[in-house]
Image 1 (cartoon, rainbow, N blue to C red):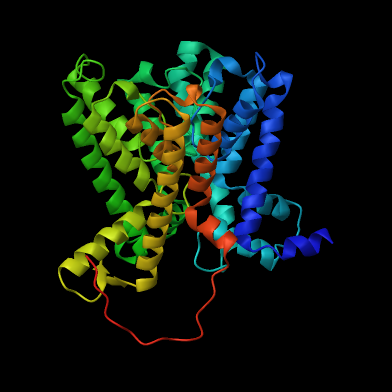
Image 2: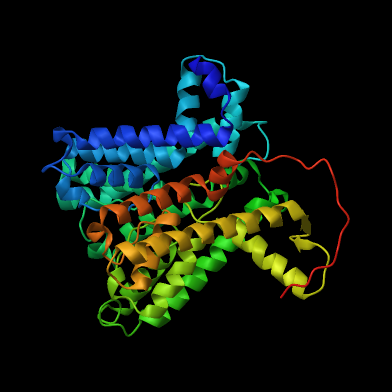
Length: 440
């Protein structure tokens, strides 16, 4: 009976249920007395578990002081499972047990990994897990080289493992209350941590394509767009933040030129979805905050550990606008045309996202007593699964925390997943005549 009930669910519905189940399981584990140094509320436990599962990084209690080693390990496991994907781990376990991966499981995987077909989906899962563990393992060794001399073998190694997993999965959770502000000018920490969340955020599809394709011209269009898009937006973001914050005494002004460059670079790339900070977010200029809102809304790449509307979605919209202004009939990039269905999908993702952000901001403006831009920053940070905050997260009301929890889930699962779970898409069987319409 239960099996038949689950078979009636479409992949988006099943994916949402599985995700909620693990978030609730994490909530119960974090509520155990062994998990915390002092008792926390059920809402705070749910918030923390959801933030970890969605690899967001927003916190209502300090990770390093409020949770015991056991609690921190639970958070770390939730981050790893949420970042790489619940279904990815489930399929891996099935493979290890010698079980057959059915068509239903492949459909859920296809939706979870945002793939166009189910073909090769199990092979992609194997590659994702392999890449993730290899990259995290190398990062642990590099960070251990930096932190073991400072903290000793046990603590140094543990800090390295925690931040390697948190970074690669774009979670933004840190053992330290000030995140990475104490390492604002440290080359090793800046390079390793940023490399991890850039690699994690660029997408597993891109990583596998780069690994198995030897020539640039043979890379698929998605990979080329992600590589050029990531490089361009990161360089532009760094330049803008460097200029805007250069004379700010609360962020960059008192740093050396080298530290200014490191801080500008790190804060530019982490804003895309990583959530770590090496300068005080609440002290940044208003222009910098508005710029970061755009970066967080765009987010990382498809099939990545990050959130947001995704970089390729943003690029497609920009290309579509440019094509329309120039009076052309089709979008062309890297000598390849982009089908109209992808433009419609990009518009749907962006529109649904903006609507949910607006509704959430409206509710928070009623329940929370703080500035609108601070609330907007919190909402978009949650949607982009970024985890950066201007400092109001612990002060949110229970209703406010509930709104942010929902937005974190929306950002991780994707707005179309929620839309598809409510209304199954169907191909129209009837075509109607066209008629002109006035717009603009």
